[in-house]
Image (cartoon, rainbow, N blue to C red):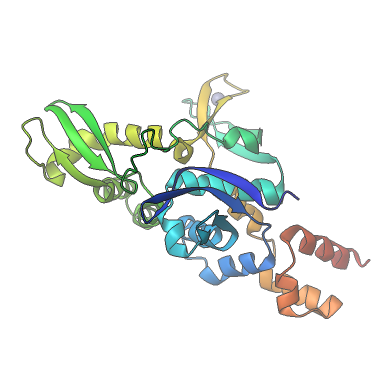
Amino acid sequence: MAADMVVRLEQGLWRDGSCFASGRVRALIGEDEALLADLGLAAVPAVRITALVAAACRIDGFGNLTPNDARLLSIGDRERFLIALYRANFGEQLDAVAQCPANACGETVEFELATECLLAPHEKAIEPADGAIPPPLTREVALDTERGTWQVRFRVPNGSDQELAARAALSDTAKAADLVLERCVAEVIDANGQPLTVDDWRPQLREPLSATFSELDAQANMSYALRCPVCDAGFAAVVDAGTFLLRELASRHGIFAEVDQLARAYHWSEAEILALPVARRRRYLAMVAGGG
Ligand SMILES: [Zn+2]
Protein backbone atom coordinates (compact mmCIF):
# COMPACT_ATOMS: atom_id res chain seq x y z
CA MET A 1 0.00 0.00 0.00
CA ALA A 2 1.49 3.30 -1.11
CA ALA A 3 0.64 5.31 1.99
CA ASP A 4 1.98 8.81 2.38
CA MET A 5 1.56 9.44 -1.32
CA VAL A 6 2.71 12.92 -2.37
CA VAL A 7 0.19 15.24 -4.02
CA ARG A 8 1.09 18.32 -6.04
CA LEU A 9 -1.66 20.89 -5.65
CA GLU A 10 -2.51 23.29 -8.42
CA GLN A 11 -3.90 26.24 -6.44
CA GLY A 12 -2.43 25.43 -3.06
CA LEU A 13 -3.43 26.74 0.33
CA TRP A 14 -2.43 30.24 1.39
CA ARG A 15 -1.36 31.49 4.78
CA ASP A 16 0.33 34.78 5.66
CA GLY A 17 1.09 35.56 2.01
CA SER A 18 2.71 32.19 1.27
CA CYS A 19 1.40 29.38 -0.84
CA PHE A 20 1.71 25.76 0.32
CA ALA A 21 1.25 23.41 -2.61
CA SER A 22 2.71 20.02 -1.74
CA GLY A 23 0.49 17.61 0.15
CA ARG A 24 0.37 14.03 1.39
CA VAL A 25 -2.28 11.44 2.06
CA ARG A 26 -2.21 8.54 4.51
CA ALA A 27 -3.78 5.11 4.62
CA LEU A 28 -7.47 5.27 5.51
CA ILE A 29 -8.49 3.54 8.73
CA GLY A 30 -11.75 2.51 10.33
CA GLU A 31 -11.80 5.79 12.25
CA ASP A 32 -12.24 7.63 8.92
CA GLU A 33 -15.20 5.46 8.02
CA ALA A 34 -16.70 6.01 11.47
CA LEU A 35 -16.33 9.77 10.91
CA LEU A 36 -18.26 9.50 7.64
CA ALA A 37 -20.89 7.27 9.22
CA ASP A 38 -21.36 9.77 12.07
CA LEU A 39 -22.14 12.51 9.53
CA GLY A 40 -25.28 10.58 8.70
CA LEU A 41 -27.04 9.87 5.45
CA ALA A 42 -28.25 13.45 5.08
CA ALA A 43 -24.72 14.81 4.52
CA VAL A 44 -24.16 15.61 0.82
CA PRO A 45 -20.99 14.12 -0.77
CA ALA A 46 -19.17 17.49 -0.69
CA VAL A 47 -19.56 17.60 3.11
CA ARG A 48 -18.23 14.03 3.43
CA ILE A 49 -15.29 14.95 1.20
CA THR A 50 -14.44 17.92 3.43
CA ALA A 51 -14.37 15.60 6.45
CA LEU A 52 -12.24 13.01 4.66
CA VAL A 53 -9.72 15.53 3.29
CA ALA A 54 -9.34 17.17 6.72
CA ALA A 55 -8.85 13.79 8.40
CA ALA A 56 -6.51 12.00 6.01
CA CYS A 57 -4.60 14.70 4.10
CA ARG A 58 -1.96 17.18 5.12
CA ILE A 59 0.07 19.90 3.46
CA ASP A 60 3.85 20.17 3.84
CA GLY A 61 4.81 23.18 5.94
CA PHE A 62 1.16 23.81 6.79
CA GLY A 63 0.48 20.82 8.98
CA ASN A 64 -2.76 18.97 9.47
CA LEU A 65 -5.88 20.38 7.88
CA THR A 66 -8.99 21.53 9.72
CA PRO A 67 -12.37 21.10 8.00
CA ASN A 68 -12.21 24.81 7.28
CA ASP A 69 -8.83 24.45 5.54
CA ALA A 70 -10.33 21.64 3.48
CA ARG A 71 -13.15 24.01 2.47
CA LEU A 72 -10.64 26.64 1.36
CA LEU A 73 -8.96 24.26 -1.08
CA SER A 74 -10.08 24.66 -4.68
CA ILE A 75 -12.42 21.97 -5.99
CA GLY A 76 -9.61 20.75 -8.26
CA ASP A 77 -7.12 20.48 -5.39
CA ARG A 78 -9.64 18.56 -3.28
CA GLU A 79 -10.02 16.24 -6.25
CA ARG A 80 -6.23 15.78 -6.47
CA PHE A 81 -6.24 14.71 -2.82
CA LEU A 82 -9.13 12.32 -3.43
CA ILE A 83 -7.40 10.70 -6.39
CA ALA A 84 -4.28 10.19 -4.24
CA LEU A 85 -6.39 8.76 -1.41
CA TYR A 86 -8.01 6.34 -3.82
CA ARG A 87 -4.66 5.27 -5.29
CA ALA A 88 -3.00 4.87 -1.90
CA ASN A 89 -5.84 2.79 -0.48
CA PHE A 90 -7.66 1.02 -3.29
CA GLY A 91 -5.17 0.75 -6.13
CA GLU A 92 -4.60 2.04 -9.60
CA GLN A 93 -7.79 0.97 -11.31
CA LEU A 94 -11.38 2.19 -11.29
CA ASP A 95 -14.43 0.38 -12.61
CA ALA A 96 -16.82 3.01 -13.90
CA VAL A 97 -20.09 3.22 -15.81
CA ALA A 98 -21.51 5.97 -18.01
CA GLN A 99 -24.70 6.37 -19.97
CA CYS A 100 -24.40 6.88 -23.75
CA PRO A 101 -26.00 10.30 -24.39
CA ALA A 102 -26.96 9.58 -28.03
CA ASN A 103 -30.67 9.83 -28.77
CA ALA A 104 -32.44 6.48 -28.88
CA CYS A 105 -29.38 4.70 -27.46
CA GLY A 106 -28.81 5.33 -23.75
CA GLU A 107 -26.61 2.23 -23.46
CA THR A 108 -24.88 1.78 -20.11
CA VAL A 109 -21.19 1.68 -20.96
CA GLU A 110 -18.87 -0.01 -18.46
CA PHE A 111 -15.24 0.94 -18.58
CA GLU A 112 -12.01 0.49 -16.70
CA LEU A 113 -9.84 3.43 -15.99
CA ALA A 114 -6.30 3.79 -14.65
CA THR A 115 -6.49 6.29 -11.79
CA GLU A 116 -3.47 8.02 -13.29
CA CYS A 117 -5.64 9.03 -16.27
CA LEU A 118 -7.80 11.08 -13.89
CA LEU A 119 -5.02 13.55 -13.22
CA ALA A 120 -5.16 16.81 -15.17
CA PRO A 121 -1.75 17.99 -16.36
CA HIS A 122 -0.15 20.70 -14.25
CA GLU A 123 -0.27 23.76 -16.46
CA LYS A 124 -1.36 26.65 -14.33
CA ALA A 125 0.98 26.20 -11.40
CA ILE A 126 0.98 29.41 -9.44
CA GLU A 127 4.59 30.14 -8.85
CA PRO A 128 4.89 33.89 -9.20
CA ALA A 129 7.56 34.42 -11.87
CA ASP A 130 8.94 37.73 -10.63
CA GLY A 131 8.83 37.02 -6.92
CA ALA A 132 5.57 38.92 -6.54
CA ILE A 133 3.10 37.04 -4.39
CA PRO A 134 -0.47 37.25 -5.67
CA PRO A 135 -3.15 37.85 -3.06
CA PRO A 136 -4.71 34.57 -1.92
CA LEU A 137 -6.68 33.05 -4.74
CA THR A 138 -7.82 36.33 -6.24
CA ARG A 139 -7.45 36.70 -9.95
CA GLU A 140 -8.35 39.18 -12.62
CA VAL A 141 -9.45 38.47 -16.14
CA ALA A 142 -10.79 40.51 -19.07
CA LEU A 143 -13.86 38.84 -20.57
CA ASP A 144 -15.53 39.82 -23.84
CA THR A 145 -19.30 40.23 -23.65
CA GLU A 146 -21.99 41.62 -25.95
CA ARG A 147 -21.58 44.86 -24.05
CA GLY A 148 -17.81 45.18 -24.46
CA THR A 149 -14.84 43.93 -22.50
CA TRP A 150 -15.35 43.66 -18.75
CA GLN A 151 -12.74 43.31 -16.03
CA VAL A 152 -13.63 40.58 -13.55
CA ARG A 153 -11.99 40.05 -10.18
CA PHE A 154 -12.72 36.59 -8.81
CA ARG A 155 -11.40 33.43 -7.18
CA VAL A 156 -11.84 29.86 -8.37
CA PRO A 157 -14.59 27.88 -6.60
CA ASN A 158 -13.51 26.08 -3.43
CA GLY A 159 -14.82 23.42 -1.08
CA SER A 160 -17.20 25.74 0.74
CA ASP A 161 -18.80 26.73 -2.58
CA GLN A 162 -19.00 23.04 -3.44
CA GLU A 163 -20.78 22.25 -0.16
CA LEU A 164 -23.28 25.09 -0.52
CA ALA A 165 -23.92 24.32 -4.18
CA ALA A 166 -24.46 20.65 -3.43
CA ARG A 167 -27.11 21.53 -0.83
CA ALA A 168 -28.77 24.08 -3.15
CA ALA A 169 -28.67 21.63 -6.08
CA LEU A 170 -30.94 19.25 -4.17
CA SER A 171 -33.79 21.57 -5.13
CA ASP A 172 -32.50 23.65 -8.08
CA THR A 173 -29.29 22.95 -10.04
CA ALA A 174 -29.35 26.20 -12.07
CA LYS A 175 -29.70 28.21 -8.87
CA ALA A 176 -26.80 26.28 -7.34
CA ALA A 177 -24.52 27.23 -10.26
CA ASP A 178 -25.54 30.90 -9.95
CA LEU A 179 -24.83 30.80 -6.23
CA VAL A 180 -21.25 29.68 -6.91
CA LEU A 181 -20.74 32.50 -9.44
CA GLU A 182 -22.05 35.07 -7.01
CA ARG A 183 -19.76 33.86 -4.23
CA CYS A 184 -16.65 33.70 -6.42
CA VAL A 185 -16.92 37.06 -8.18
CA ALA A 186 -15.68 40.01 -6.16
CA GLU A 187 -16.15 42.75 -8.73
CA VAL A 188 -17.08 43.35 -12.37
CA ILE A 189 -16.14 46.61 -14.09
CA ASP A 190 -17.69 47.41 -17.47
CA ALA A 191 -16.00 48.99 -20.53
CA ASN A 192 -16.70 52.49 -19.11
CA GLY A 193 -15.06 51.72 -15.79
CA GLN A 194 -18.39 51.38 -13.97
CA PRO A 195 -19.03 48.56 -11.46
CA LEU A 196 -21.91 46.27 -12.40
CA THR A 197 -24.50 44.65 -10.13
CA VAL A 198 -24.85 40.87 -9.93
CA ASP A 199 -28.14 40.92 -11.87
CA ASP A 200 -26.42 42.97 -14.55
CA TRP A 201 -23.33 40.80 -15.05
CA ARG A 202 -24.64 37.32 -14.32
CA PRO A 203 -26.45 36.54 -17.61
CA GLN A 204 -23.41 37.67 -19.60
CA LEU A 205 -20.75 35.96 -17.54
CA ARG A 206 -22.25 32.54 -16.78
CA GLU A 207 -20.58 30.81 -19.71
CA PRO A 208 -17.26 32.65 -20.02
CA LEU A 209 -16.67 32.42 -16.27
CA SER A 210 -17.32 28.70 -16.02
CA ALA A 211 -14.90 28.25 -18.92
CA THR A 212 -12.35 30.36 -17.03
CA PHE A 213 -12.85 28.30 -13.86
CA SER A 214 -12.35 25.07 -15.82
CA GLU A 215 -9.22 26.40 -17.44
CA LEU A 216 -7.63 27.56 -14.18
CA ASP A 217 -8.69 24.61 -12.03
CA ALA A 218 -8.79 21.87 -14.66
CA GLN A 219 -8.83 19.05 -12.11
CA ALA A 220 -12.30 20.16 -11.00
CA ASN A 221 -13.83 19.12 -14.33
CA MET A 222 -12.02 16.09 -15.64
CA SER A 223 -13.82 14.07 -18.27
CA TYR A 224 -12.85 10.92 -20.04
CA ALA A 225 -13.34 10.28 -23.78
CA LEU A 226 -15.44 7.19 -24.47
CA ARG A 227 -16.97 5.47 -27.48
CA CYS A 228 -20.30 3.68 -27.19
CA PRO A 229 -19.88 -0.01 -28.19
CA VAL A 230 -23.49 -0.14 -29.43
CA CYS A 231 -24.01 3.01 -31.54
CA ASP A 232 -20.35 4.11 -31.90
CA ALA A 233 -21.10 7.65 -30.64
CA GLY A 234 -18.16 9.40 -29.02
CA PHE A 235 -18.86 11.20 -25.75
CA ALA A 236 -17.17 12.54 -22.63
CA ALA A 237 -17.91 10.97 -19.26
CA VAL A 238 -17.30 13.07 -16.17
CA VAL A 239 -15.34 11.03 -13.64
CA ASP A 240 -14.80 12.36 -10.14
CA ALA A 241 -12.67 10.49 -7.65
CA GLY A 242 -14.89 11.47 -4.70
CA THR A 243 -17.74 9.30 -5.94
CA PHE A 244 -15.49 6.25 -6.20
CA LEU A 245 -13.81 6.85 -2.90
CA LEU A 246 -17.08 7.31 -1.00
CA ARG A 247 -18.46 4.21 -2.69
CA GLU A 248 -15.44 2.14 -1.61
CA LEU A 249 -15.80 3.42 1.95
CA ALA A 250 -19.50 2.73 2.22
CA SER A 251 -18.86 -0.74 3.61
CA ARG A 252 -21.55 -3.28 2.99
CA HIS A 253 -22.81 -3.66 6.52
CA GLY A 254 -21.66 -0.36 7.99
CA ILE A 255 -18.53 0.27 9.98
CA PHE A 256 -20.16 -0.23 13.39
CA ALA A 257 -21.55 -3.65 12.47
CA GLU A 258 -18.05 -4.61 11.36
CA VAL A 259 -16.55 -3.43 14.66
CA ASP A 260 -19.17 -5.51 16.45
CA GLN A 261 -18.30 -8.57 14.39
CA LEU A 262 -14.53 -8.29 14.94
CA ALA A 263 -14.88 -7.45 18.64
CA ARG A 264 -16.93 -10.61 19.15
CA ALA A 265 -14.47 -12.75 17.20
CA TYR A 266 -11.14 -11.39 18.46
CA HIS A 267 -12.04 -9.46 21.64
CA TRP A 268 -10.25 -6.34 20.36
CA SER A 269 -11.37 -2.93 21.61
CA GLU A 270 -13.30 -0.50 19.43
CA ALA A 271 -10.26 1.80 19.27
CA GLU A 272 -8.00 -1.06 18.14
CA ILE A 273 -10.40 -2.09 15.40
CA LEU A 274 -10.97 1.47 14.17
CA ALA A 275 -7.19 2.02 13.98
CA LEU A 276 -6.77 -0.80 11.45
CA PRO A 277 -6.23 0.23 7.81
CA VAL A 278 -9.41 -0.40 5.81
CA ALA A 279 -7.89 -3.19 3.68
CA ARG A 280 -6.49 -4.98 6.76
CA ARG A 281 -9.82 -4.88 8.60
CA ARG A 282 -11.56 -6.32 5.57
CA ARG A 283 -9.14 -9.26 5.50
CA TYR A 284 -10.02 -10.13 9.09
CA LEU A 285 -13.70 -9.77 8.32
CA ALA A 286 -13.31 -12.20 5.40
CA MET A 287 -11.59 -14.65 7.75
CA VAL A 288 -14.36 -14.38 10.33
CA ALA A 289 -16.97 -14.86 7.60
CA GLY A 290 -15.04 -17.87 6.25
CA GLY A 291 -14.85 -19.37 9.71
CA GLY A 292 -11.05 -19.60 9.50
ZN1 LIG B 1 -24.76 4.58 -27.75
